[in-house]
Length: 557
Image (cartoon, rainbow, N blue to C red; front, side, top):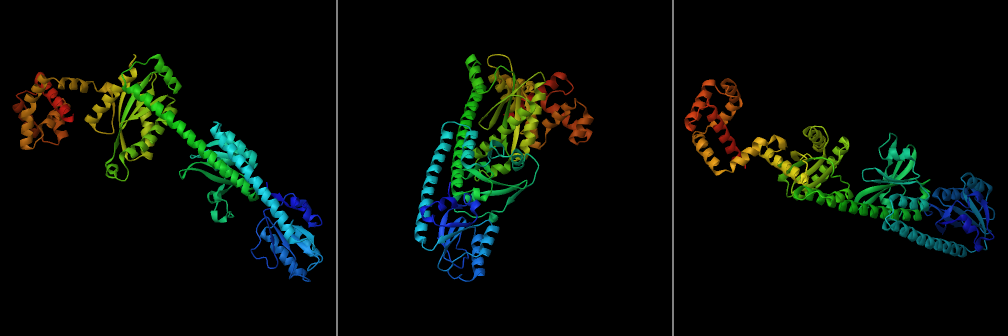
């Protein structure tokens, strides 16, 4: 696209003109504008301009003509045409030698040819070319957008872009992972994306020549392994979804048409990423809902459910460990709820947690199914012949180690249960993992891992605590001790627990309580007196321990 000096020379108005220097460059030099300039040049001439001059003011002064030509060459003009026969009769040889040395085109135009006719003819050619360029750019825009609408791949879009710009192009996502490549050098691309070692330097924006095209403001220039590359961000809602990398032969390759094509390509890439995100989000929601229904609905795992799972990429015929986690916000985070609402924070944290779950599953080469519900994360982790707690701990270690670096404002508690055989395996294992989580948080606080198999005594105590007769026995047994502790500000119950922990060893218990042996014995006699139970009688000791545990369980609930 664009007209060249060769196109201008072929115009009828230029029929009697003579090319004095640079004949080999006629097909290379493009023309974007035409102007009439006399001495001095200063900054009135721009790049790729066709300059007309009568040489007025330079007559009989070859040195002044030479300086004038030198200024035009330095301005970046494509051609200088002298009208000879009035002020300049013959272009001096030293001027022609200067032009030849700089590979610059000089044309001799007879004085009889009016500048107005030349300007009119060339401007008409430029206008027609611009109109063709605009029509072609619009055709390219439709082609690129249709690639997205017709569900074609990124590679198809980059292929179309390469065909219209004839320069290597590549597309990466926001994490600098290459998504498509057309003829871009793989080593340069690896260095650019940080995957390979090499020299890379960004050219300051102040050193990039300015252009009126709007995307020039987003253009970034780099020198990678001594080769010049450019980058444009693929934006959506002012956020970079990815990057378009391209490598023109030189800056002159970045014509207005090429910049228009690049702008249309950015729009197509942005639409592709938005569409891809929408599809991915829909898939995530379908998976979330499926796993949540699997965990919380007391339904059989039928052939239909298994088939639906396969469509979503899940295999329900394998054994799984169910892990339920609860997300605790630290106090510093809760104080900032007005600035950063909890729901928004949890959604952001869920994103990081999901990423780390996927990563941990890949590291251990195990399938995972994940969903989130009411501040909890529900995970089904593929099991094998290894002990399930060993597998679960290894999996959770990877997640927590990486999360501690990314999200510092949360603490995670976990409940773990093994997959059981049967039609309701997923529902039952979720119930058990959730129960283990609940017991663990009540007994140990946040940040712990609790296996359902380790909660047998707690579940037994919970079942007993609902019996009214047992509740009455518990109250009769320890109420006098509670009243005494409340009145005297002592802690006889805690004293008993420590004494019982050390299996009646007074010396060890006294050391743990930081008490004198006689002081501990005095407390133990008080407990016996208040409860009417003997601490050396096995039945009495069992009754007192059971009563204290049930009371503590009720207190936690």
